[in-house]
Length: 89
Length: 426
Image (cartoon, rainbow over all chains, first blue to last red; front, side, top):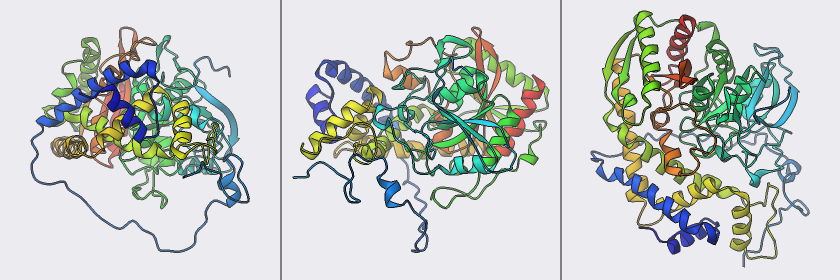
């Protein structure tokens, strides 16, 4: 059973918050969904997962890409070709 | 034309320069498919104002074929929903009954076609998002085999499932639109080199073996819907198809496997939305990193998107990854094997697209799990990666019902030919 405190912590890992007034209902539906997922516990696991691996890399050659101007077009207050982001420390 | 159905989030009139088979035809594009110089929001506040600097590959191909891009259509935010009520810009309305939902998540595309605003539209289908609204609005919608249409420029939600696909009033237009968008694209590493030849479309069902999975008529499927679909299957038999009962025992795991996987993928894919490079809400650069992003993302994402990101974050976290994600991978493999086995014995599988007809607005939004369960008959084709079409086959409770035909991997030809044969006989 996931508690309201668990929900707050998990949401924080994803840079999200659940408003206090919605927390009880959110936690309730969260647990109902997890309970439904429990059907996977009845799956009989045989053998291993098939993994078809093949190389999808192209040759390392310069190809057409977005211009710096286009890449920055949708950002807020770019400065001298850089994107402005919150401070890390 | 007035948009009575809230089908469009932005209207446009951008004529392609090509001279192909879509010359002059107006095509609407779902709002999670990037369109150069046309706002693309995924029906989310977090992307309000975003103007893509490039076209999705499918849109480039539309323009090369001469299509006119008629605008961007409403949807459940980032494709997360089965009614289009999870749009940040209000629900699309079903042209057959505007007190009912269109289905989702490509509900705006379905409403635009069913309401006569455009003859064709692009949708995307992660767990039924083309077929559900096609069925509930009474039009045709095709989810292509995984890889047959490039996902370049499709804003990702659950990228191991989703495909861009065509929606139209009839099978011929659906096939025509599919022929334009199918084919290889080097910019999508999962793309395959399998173009579709529209000239090959022909009504063809006689002599085909059609499997009827018992699970598609089980608990939760409305009896009137099941009856309408059984009548449609009887029509396929009249046309010379042979039907056999088949079983897909692992289908009981499909919905859980799908929702575990898609929420895990969503938690990763939607990590990029922080307001820094695009989006209306800018992060406060004076705040610490996590606080600033939490503020943007909490304000920008709607309830269902937040729920799925949090679910996926939980399911991928240490201690739970094995319980959820790994088991979902095994279930997915088992389901794909069940479908592959059934499709060695049969040419096609048939059943209802949706277990019910379109519900009233607000009916499914109260309980997220109930909303998820509406996808029970559509998610298996996404898990197996196979092509699946919804074609109108009559009504139940005075609302449209869709017949779902599923085929072998990359055999859209058989699916479309069978759907055309059925449509011509109706």
